[in-house]
Length: 37
Image 1 (cartoon, rainbow, N blue to C red):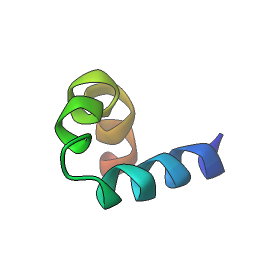
Image 2: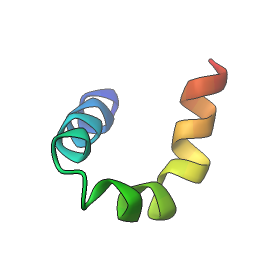
Image 3: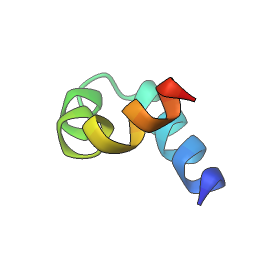
Image 4: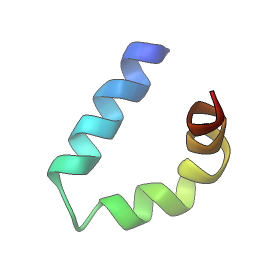
């Protein structure tokens, strides 16, 4: 799962237009947990 998250983050970072959408969908829960750790 960690690899999937990293891969997704890299892919999202590569596409500015998709990034905001992904942030709204997944970031609030997963990203916050990762950021805290």
